[in-house]
Image 1 (cartoon, helix red, strand yellow):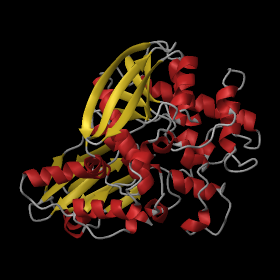
Image 2 (spheres, one colour):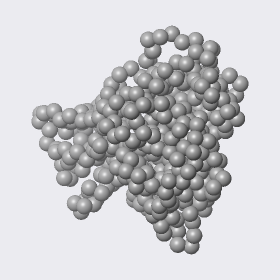
Image 3 (tube, one colour):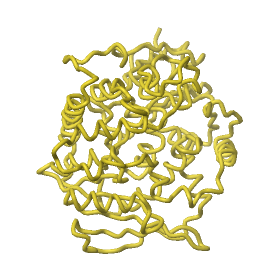
Length: 439
């Protein structure tokens, strides 16, 4: 039977391009629609069934669906929104359109079933590091080959992940790299480390200063040469209301979890400065924290029968999802949170975010690296092995794990927004009364 509903496509392929390694696609058939999403979920994909209007709306972001319906003076209902999971093929026919019960199937073998072509001795951290370095380099080169711009941006927090991406990116011979870091105070941990790294990588550093006074926040960009000569200063915005910054970040990200939201606000602020520099693509080090669990999440808190923070199954769930139910965990995978707190915010400003660690081979290896001494030391061992003999030891040793919004000082600006206040603002914004997504 031929489908009776129409389909509207709101996807934004300029910021969420459909490439081999990242895509969110759909195709229409005589009987329905088939939606597909990439392996790690780098490109978000949502759909909305407006049964009364007989219309299926497909978008990269929930806010685009909400705006579309409101412009047509139609009611948006959060419960009608669905997300296509990473590595999933979703088929919607007339019955599924009305009942919200689509057919879902894995596109490819899961991360747990996927095997590398090479055999790796995970106890040999030196060789594991060399393997990750090679795979990360390959992922970065694939991304660069799809970008025509001569200049790209880099989110540089001073942490090990952005450091590793920045170091490899700075070696790209045909590309100019400009790093960006946020600061509230001149001596915030992230900005001090970022200055050292930018000098070492021989790239410009744009320090995005967030000032606060009685009229609100202002954004001031200070661009420095690798030798710390100030090239220029410019004000990007002023009198930004704190509530408005939170509301806009909630609206775009669709996620009120405190850590994610504060990161989203940091991205909301820095993205305005990045666009003013004419940069269209930004690289970041997102991914390893989940793959290696160096945040130190306890599996038992999420229903696993172990306290081993290095448990492979749990790290796979953090990265990708061990099974369908894990994808609904509060921290159930990179696509559920990393894209919301970073990718969607940047896309709102027309910026494309590239995360080279978002790679199936990289994830396969990193989720299996054993915690050698304690969970908070494994990253230093691994990154040290990745760049052994390349003069980066001083930047690797003793580096602590600091969230971007914390290390830059942004969290201090919004400290009066506790979790309950964020939930209240989110529920009023989207007209819902549920908090299951925070569990």
